[in-house]
Image 1 (cartoon, one colour):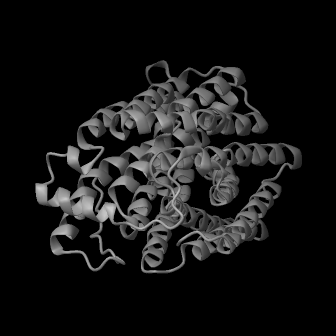
Image 2 (image 1 turned 60 degrees about the horizontal axis):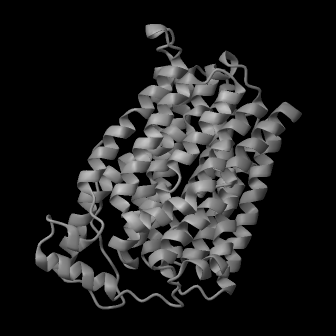
Image 3 (image 1 turned 180 degrees about the horizontal axis):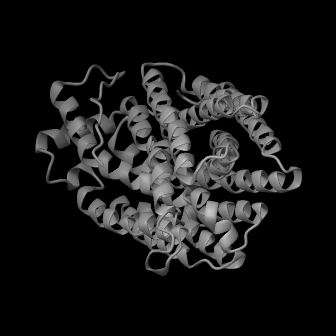
Length: 437
């Protein structure tokens, strides 16, 4: 996949960058971002492809809606349990080697999902997948924060995180096609899906090991002058009320509030991601058609995410727009309920919800590095993510249980809307805390 990296136009409080400095950061972005974006696309394919596999796997291995939701969500139990230890290990051994290790581990387990034969093996493999992936996103966030100062960070994080909706843009049609391999070489279509989307991760992990560097000083592809300019810009960044140590970071009210915000919007995000294909299927759409409809929703989310990040990077309040994005997503979920009997209007409001929740993702991860540095950044980012991503367990579990209980997805969507409204309120209350934005 070829990924175009936009030119970086920083606005620095330390004076405008020289042409040489701008070229240096563009060179770094061109080297790192394509492989990191591809890695995150694969990450989300393997994390959420259960939503498409379930179209045939659910009957094949005997899963109820509740069991599907629990199994989809139990991924986050393994993920959250090992998130902080994984990032502390990353800080000690270096991001380059540790991120490679994570990718090889999750690629093997993702492919092994094809071996599930019933609810218990499904639960075990999903838990193992979460444990294998633990630390990947906060590890990359920490890595990017050590290479790009604040004035570059919103767009860099947004271009990395656009992989989330983009994985569904390509994942929907791809998964629909792979399901049609049913019976080839004696394997079910859902087994082909897991193997075809899991094994390439191992190859990309090895490539990543060659392309990444932990520090500007470790590179052979930056000139001595470029290394000096990059290091000077990074070292001169001001961080109000800076937290440098691990345990104080965990007690910082800003860290706890941000973990709560992420929990709220990830409940909604994963609740809809896992069940969107099931919801679309109610419109009597084929498996391939389901892939293209969901792909369109996520394509809109990709565009909205990048445009929103560009606006925020031009000086708009990150806190305000984090709250607005969560509120927009809540409105989208509610709109999908109002128009539940009308297929395309309902899909439109689903797309609105996805634009909001993915906009929140892009903005959210630019905030913690403003006050966390060093081991506090490695551990603090992982702590926020480990607490926040438990929302990935709660969302699918609630959606599956309410679907089995009520026979409809409307109650689940209403619950998702409520969680997003709570996240919006908590995000807005961050304005009352001195966060050094």
